[in-house]
Amino acid sequence: MLKVKNLRKVYGQGEICVEALKGVDFDIQPGEFVSIMGPSGSGKSTLMNILGCLDKATEGTYELDGHSIEDIPTNDLAHIRNKKIGFVFQSFNLLPKLTALKNVELSLIYMGLPKEERLERATVALKRVGLEDRMHHHPNEMSGGQKQRVAVARALATNPAIILADEPTGNLDSHSTDEILKLFENLNKEGKTIIIVTHEDDVAHRTKRMLLFKDGQLVSDEEVNHEHH
Amino acid sequence: MNIIEAFKIALSAIWSNRMRSLLTMLGLIIGISSVVTIVSIGNGTQDAMVENFESLGINRISISEDRRATLTPSEKLTIADMDLIRETFAEEVETITPKVSKNVTIVENIDETSVTLTGVSMDSEEVLDLTMLSGRFINEFDIDARKDWVVMDSDTAEAIYGSTDIAGEKVLLSFGKVTKSVQVVGVYEAEESLSGFSQAALYTPYTTIDKLFNLQGIINGIEIGLADGYDKDTVESEILSLVERRHGNEGEEKYSTFSAEDQMEMVTSTLETVTLFVSAIAAISLVVGGIGIMNIMLVSVTERTREIGIRKALGATRKDILVQFLIEAVTVSMLGGFLGAIVGMVLTSVVATVMSLSATLAWESVGLAVVFSASIGIFFGIYPANKAAKLDPIEALRYE
Image 1: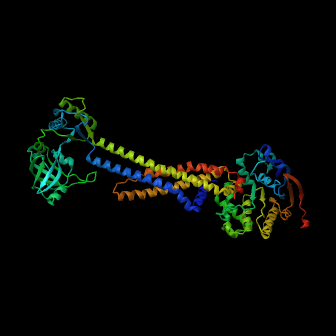
Image 2 (image 1 turned 180 degrees about the vertical axis):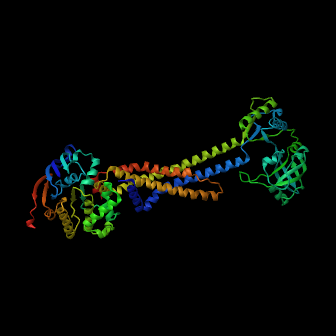
Image 3 (image 1 turned 120 degrees about the vertical axis):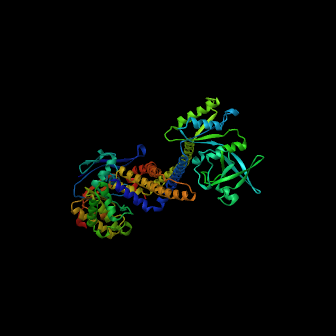
C-alpha cells in the first residue's frame, strides 16, 4: 500500500546543500499502525511531508495506494492529498471562523461532493469521534482534545487510504492524549492505516510498529512489544 | 469546488471583516456614484435642451450677414429680400419674420426703463407663441398701416404700471434724441428663457420700427419656418442662392445660415465633451479604488497564509485557491459598484432637486458601472489571488 525505496531529499544546491533523507526504504501494509520516531533533525518531518504528498523526494520512489507519486505533477498532488490522505496536525489547524461541522466539510468540498452528501459524511465522521453534540461549536469553544477530535473527524471524512498524524498529541494534556490515542487504536481495529510522527516514547509504544530515524536514516524498524506496558 | 461554494466563502470572509471591506469599497462607491450622477445630470440637461429646441421647431432657418464679411449698403438684407423669399417659396415657407430690433428707453414720469423694441411680421404671433394677458398682438392691418403700436411684456407692465391690464395706455419711447408716444395694444406673459431670466421686449410692426429709425428696409436677418415635408438643407441653399442672386454676390459668402438644428448639435456636443471629461476624472477614482482592493487583498492573503496552507493540505488545488481569492476581490468590487450605483441614483435625485436641474437616470451607466467594477475586481484581484495560489503548502502551514 505504501512503498518507499531509496528515498533521498536534498535541500539547497552545491556546497551549502543539506541532505535531510539519505536513502530510506520501508513498506507499510494496509491496516498497520505505525509510529515514526526520532529527535529533531532526524529527517522525520521531511519524511512526513513527502508521505503526505506535500513535498517530493529528490531521488528514490514513493508509491502510495498504487500511485507513483514522483510521476504526478505537483499541482495534481492536491487531488492525491484530498482522496488518499487524512492529515492530523499538532496545532489542530482548524479554521477558527468555521464550526466543527464546516471544518469537517472542508475536505469534502474539495472532493466536489454535493451539499447533502457532505453534510451526511461530516455528521457521520463527527459522531465517530463522539462530538455529535459539538457539531455547531466553533474551535474557540472547545478543549484541545475536542479540537483534535474534530481534526481526526476531518481526516476520516474523505475515507482516505492512510491517516497521517504529525505530533497529534504534542499540544494535549495526558487525559486528552489518552483519548486521542484510544481513538486511533479503535480506528486501527476497524482497519484504518495510521501513521503517527512523534518524539514521545509513550505515544510510540501505543502503536504496533516503530520506525526510528536518526540523521536522515532509518536506524531501526521493529514491532512494538505491548507486554512491557 | 464550484463557483457557488467559492462565492459563499468569499461572502463570509467579507462579512467577518465588515469595516475593512466597507472602507475598501469606499473608493469604488465614490467613483461609481460620481460617474452615475454626472452622466445622469448631463443626460438630463441634454434631454431638456433637445426638448427646448424641438419646441422651438427644428425646421427653422435663419439667414444673416456673415460676421466675417464686409457688406456694401446694397448688399445688406432688406424687407425686399424677405418679401421675395415669401413669394418664391410660397409652398416651402410656412412662417417668415424679419430680425430687426433696437434698444429704446421707456420714459414714465422720471423713471427710465431700457427695453428692446423688436419688429414683427404677421407670422410672428405664431412663431413667438406668446400668451396674451390683455389686449391683442400686432396684426396684418397694423403692419400695413405702420401703426405706432406696441405689445408689452408683463414684467415691464407690472414694473411701470403695477398692472398687466394696460391695453390702450400710451407710453413714451426715447431713442437717440427722439421721443415718441406709442400706444400699448396688448400685454403678453413674460416667460423665463433658457438662461433663466426674461428679457423685456416690446413688439411693434417691422414697418413701424423701419419708419421710426429710418432703416430704409434694412434688417439684421430673416427667420424662416419651413412647412413639413421639405428638406431643410435643400431649401436653405436654394434660399441662400436666391438672396445672393438678388444682390449680385453669388459665391462670395456674404450671408450665413444657421438652423436650430445646428445650434442644438453645437450645444449637445459641448455638453457631451464636458460630461466625458468629468467622467474621466471620476474614473480615476475607480482606478484608485481598484488599487485599494489589491492592497487589502494582499493583506488578506498574508493574514490567511495558514488558512491557505490548511486548504491546500486538505486537497485545494492552485485553481481552487485562485478562484476563491479572485471571487472575493470581484465580490468586494461588485458590491462596491452596486452600492455606488445606488448612492449615485440617490445623489442624482438630490442634486437635481436642489439645483433644479433635470436629470435622466443613466441606466446604461449604472450597468456599465457594475460591469466595470467587476472588471476592476478581476484586474486588481488577479495578482493577490495568484500569490495565494502559488504559496507552498509546507511553508504556509508553518506560518504563524
